[in-house]
Length: 79
Image (cartoon, rainbow, N blue to C red; front, top):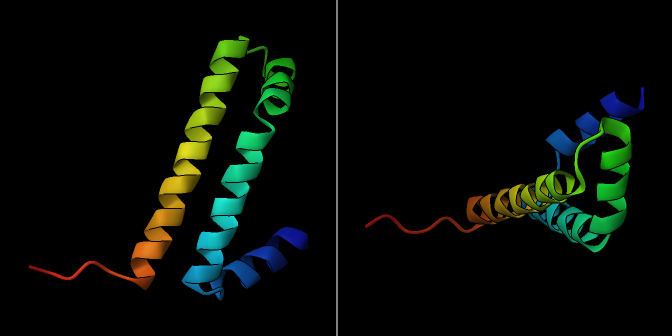
């Protein structure tokens, strides 16, 4: 199944690849925030401000995860 194949590819991908994909995903969510918020509102009944805030948190989470992958590649030196 497609989800399993995607998982197998993801688990063997390099941190640089994961970081880039997460960053690109964050950009796409942010770039389509209004449309995605409308879909979230229609599908769940959430008020638009709540749907927007949820998607903004999603973008932040994706960016944090992208940075974590970058830190895995270039860890900060220990004191």
